[in-house]
Image 1 (spheres, rainbow, N blue to C red):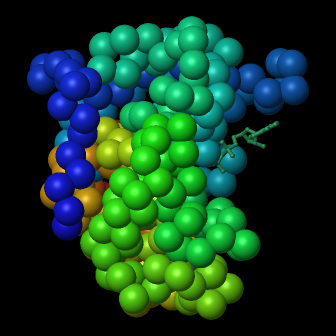
Image 2: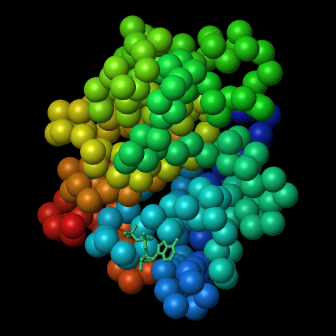
Image 3: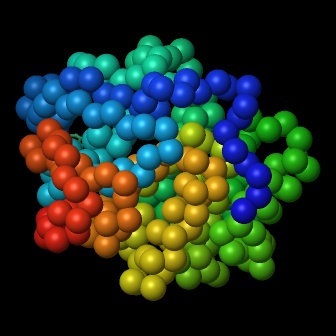
Length: 246
Ligand code: ADP
């Protein structure tokens, strides 16, 4: 793995949780859908957290709020002790601190692997040479050094997801959010992607939050929370691994 730790110019406070949700509420369609109902959650620096729960329980909504892709209707989100709500430039905040991996990869089909990984760097790293070098190293670190100039359609599902993981690390995020990252993969590729994510966590001390239906993924987490009807409660990893919650 290359040495892409968090930006040392951005101090992280050792004893504060990396991300903390207090009384999060989310309504959609006016007040018709109450997706999150006063949810509290605290995630420590360097922690691996799995979020499980049935479809419709609010997992994706929570991940979108934690990733500052959307704002809560009420409640507070703190990142490194500071409120996220009201950040003047949410997009820039996201690209500096947060990486995303989704079930559907969301690679740009007309771009090569190398170009896809550089997309989040645009606006953050000025030098094209530096962007190329960094993207190359990231792709090498996920075992795709020989696929730099391939387009997504020339790669397998597992390879595409590895490109997506490399892209998520473009700006050395402190927090990596993964929404069903193994959901579209066969068991061998799913295992490999999980290992890549855990390697990222081990090497960079990245805080990792994974939404998953897969008990074997959850069993590798430090902590598991179960969501039900817009609230969450803690479960041990061992407990979670035995739960069928699709
Ligand atoms: P999960 O990820 O656990 O399947 P979601 O967070 O996607 O749950 O959804 C929680 C609830 O919010 C569901 O009732 C869902 O239909 C609703 N919901 C999610 N996104 C939207 C949206 N953009 N507009 C309206 N309702 C939504």
